Image (cartoon, rainbow, N blue to C red; front, top):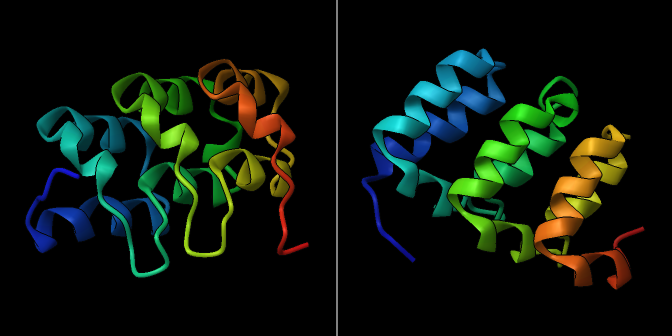
Length: 116
C-alpha cells in the first residue's frame, strides 16, 4: 500500500464524509491518486465511503474514475469483510455503478455480505 501523510488521507476521507462536490473530490484525487489506496480505521477505502454516500453512490462518473485510478479497490474488503459492491447494494446504487464494480472485480457478485 502506498503511504501518504495522515493529513492527506484524512482530507479525502473527510471530504467524502462531509459531502464535498464531485468536482472537488476529483480535483483532490488529481493531486494525489495514491489517496485512493488509504484506509480509515475500519479498513474502508475512499471507494467504500463514496459508495456509502447517498449522492456519490449514484454518481457513475465519480465511481468509474475511482475504479479506473485504483482497480484493486473493487476487490478490497473492509474490516467487516464488505466489498465496495456490498456498499453499492446497501445504498441501492444505480445499475451503471454496479456494472462498473462488477466489470473490474466479477468475483464480488458471488461474495455474500456476512454482516447482513
